[in-house]
Amino acid sequence: MQASAFQIWTIIIVLGIGTFLLRWSFLGALGNKELPEWVLRMLRYTPVAVLPALVAPLVVWPAATNGETDPARIAAATATVAVGVLTKNVLLAIIAGGSTLFGLLYVLG
Image 1 (cartoon, one colour):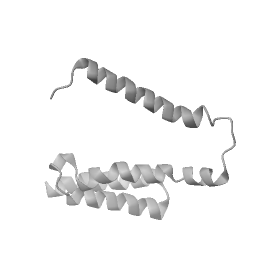
Image 2: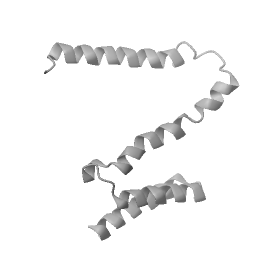
Image 3: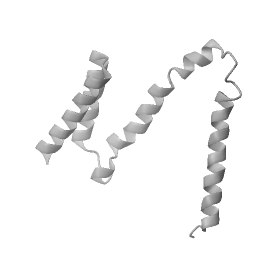
Image 4: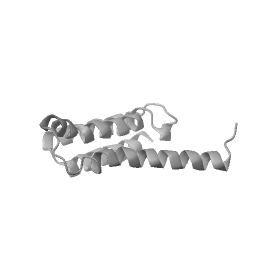
């Protein structure tokens, strides 16, 4: 079944309104109120939880290899995490991961 242009635009508009309301609930409704300490503590972990959730599927099932696990990408992710944990330097971690990925892709073909 193919969706009509009206159905597609309806979905886009409803999703846009839903996204706006979700963000407004935090920024608009709670913007001037002091949040409890436990909420602020939990919010600190949000980026740490979201980033691996976005990156992990790209490492384990990359589209570049038609979803097959690739040793170069696994090694690059490992190098990135290792350098990041050891040095606490984001730029060095990115450089280590990128150079590992490109180097192994060159060597492995």
